[in-house]
Amino acid sequence: MLEVSGITKHFNGVHAVDNASLNIPQATITSLIGPNGAGKTTLFNIICGYLEADKGAVQFNGKNLNGRAPHERASAGIGRTFQNMRLIKRLTALENLMLAFMNHKGDSFIKTMAYSISRKHEVRNREKAYELLDFVGLKDKSYEPAGSLSYGQQKLLSLACCLALDAKLLMLDEPVAGVNQETISKILSLLRKLKDTSVTVFLIEHNLDAVMEISDRLIVMDEGRIIADGLPSEVREKPEVIEAYIS
Amino acid sequence: MDYLLHILIMVAIYSIVSMSLNVLAGYTGLLSVSHAAFYGIGAYTTALLALNAGLPFWINIPAGIMLSGVIAFLIAWPSLRTYDDYFVITTFAFQIIVFSMLNNWVSFTGGPLGLPGIPQPEIFGIKISSHISFLIFVVTFAALTYLFLNRLMDSPFGRILKAIREDEIFTTSLGKDVMRFKLTAFVIGASIASISGSLYAYYISFIDQTSFTIMESIFILSIVIIGGAGNLKGSIVGSALLIFIPEILRFVGMPNSIAANMRQIFYGLLLVLFMMFRPQGIMGEFAFGKEGGVKEEVKKDA
Image (cartoon, rainbow over all chains, first blue to last red; front, side):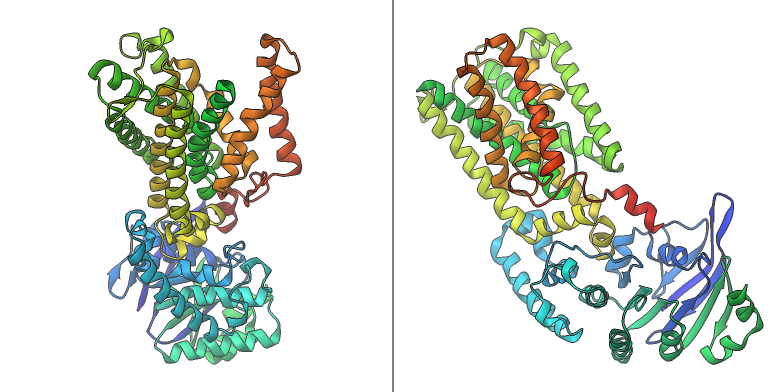
């Protein structure tokens, strides 16, 4: 589904990402772990198009994404959440979701003036938005500004936004960091449900308990390089992984 | 009586131009200081067509809208690739270029002599000449502008503009082409600004370059910020406030020469006070300077 080959990125002479290659099959949950500054978020930003790689290629569903703008990659089906929460805090939870739907005729300046067309899409999307809010357990918060939701609820809402985008690949940057245990299990069970509907999940996380619990596969990065890639139980035993975490 | 009508006409004209800037600055978060240039393009297009070709207003005003829109597109294309302060500087540069052109291209724009004797607009052969008929004429345009923009900003399109103002990266991550939306907003804002310029040219019947300076751009921006960014009614209230209050200075017996300078001090003071104590303006929802700029956000995430 996602194929990354030979990605290299320098920042002022430092190798942020050094010749990273990985392959993520459909309907799996893969975790990317590694110490701070290992280049995990940089790799995510390159895959999503926010940063341009010096070398290497990203392929999604067999299509080369090099040179594609971030919004084009998002509409191609790569949903992304961010480490520092990004939501439109002033808009309600519902409105945040309404932003995410693709192919809304009302998004275009000309077509939005054709009230009936825009209205039809709006009504249809609102139904879907309620369903999604129900799915992530935020239905009773629909009309509250996103900024007033708790941190965990905001994480759930950003996840719902990716679903509204109809993303086939979810790239989640620390989906359970700083969230209480109850919400963690809620998020993890949602991810499992999504996997069952053949959505692919690729996540960065420091919470190793959560990672071990959910991942089908574990990728470890250190100093820009991928140092291990395999089943969680195997990767955990590798000496270079243990060393990277201790040093 | 005519004096009061004159002020109301000016309030209506400034309402149009400040509502159009609100689309850019208030809703989309694009702090532009080139709005007087687009206002001027509307005024000069209308004046030149009316004087040289004798065309009626219902051709001249759309002509101004088109020209303004095309120029806005050409300007926005490169300048929207910059962020925050840099964007302000590119719009500032454009404003200076337009002013210099109006000032120096004497054979075309009349230069410092301006363009006198712009004929009054006619509807069905009736000249709009009295203050009251002009007020109706101008208020009609202001009302149409309000209805149009209100519909637009309430639509899904408007929701995306607001999202861009709050968090560009998030909006991009939802698959929206932020650049295209900004460009559209810029062109819409500039086109509508030209309407108020056309109306101004018809009303005053004489235009020169001094009405379209950078000070004028900043004045329009002050209306938007003081009235309230992200609220169209705020722009109307802001226009009324900033046009009415200086008039009071005349009545307290201040000589005209001092009153004119007092005005600038007054606007400056008002703007500083608002930025300090009520950055979201009278009825606005977005506070300039208090909420994170785009540049910082990009850095934080990279």
